[in-house]
Length: 219
Image (cartoon, rainbow, N blue to C red; front, side):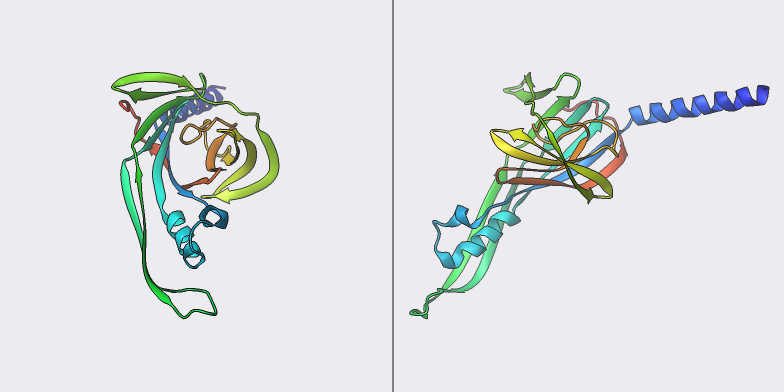
């Protein structure tokens, strides 16, 4: 009996240690976001440069990180400037013309920094505006869960469809990671979002790091 009690006691201690260890560390997820366009978006450009213009715009990517600690999500976009350049000779696709152009196309993008702390319990977020920390409510949406699934970074994800900024929002989320988290100012879903798309914006997790140090000062 004493032996059994000792084993039970040891199991409880181990469980408490495991819970405490998880509570004292975070999960950091790195995201890349890009702009997805269709040919209609560049129909105002000459036909012979449309494909190249689409490629340049869609090759520009924005990096961000999302750290999950308990009920809180620490989301950050660092300031970044990026320039994509395409060089080469383009021939006008016109059987009546043999004219060629030396085309140097470039697309410049810049991302302003952003830091927000999201709280799942209160469905709100905090950010610093004019040196003052403000609190705002996160948007809510009625999610429709589908049967579509995909594997992202080794985590099984389920598709959910909602509405964000008056546009359809499609996300893939997993329950294999602890907590509830969404990147940027997207609404929460019942799990951790690893991929999202709305309008021309498409974002996907590219790395998951566990046992990250606690964030004590963020804003």
